[in-house]
Image 1 (cartoon, rainbow, N blue to C red):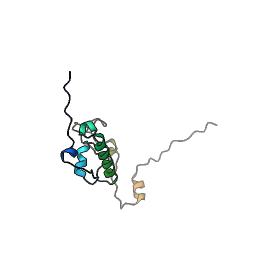
Image 2 (tube, helix red, strand yellow):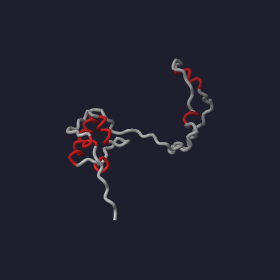
Image 3 (cartoon, helix red, strand yellow):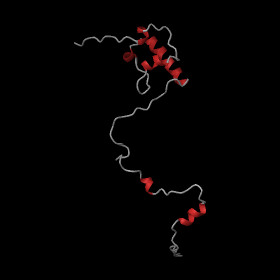
Length: 125
């Protein structure tokens, strides 16, 4: 038989807060995860009335740009899994040619190596 869990005490009850203000960002951050998601009642220790008030205050604070909607989390993984090896340079760097912005476009076209020989088109009609 499992031992009943001790209910977590909410910071609202602990600090005897009567009104949850959307401008109190430090209080609201206690109810937000590291990815800026609203924590549930079981995790935060709120009852349903407190949880509703906290959720409304967080949503208003997000709308007023006091709290971010989402946060970027930096992982501790080695290497970049999407690209493969992280020590390899991007493929586009091989084909990038340095040009100066002051150079006219005609000079750039003349510098390209265009062969004089063009393949002949044979009409079979």
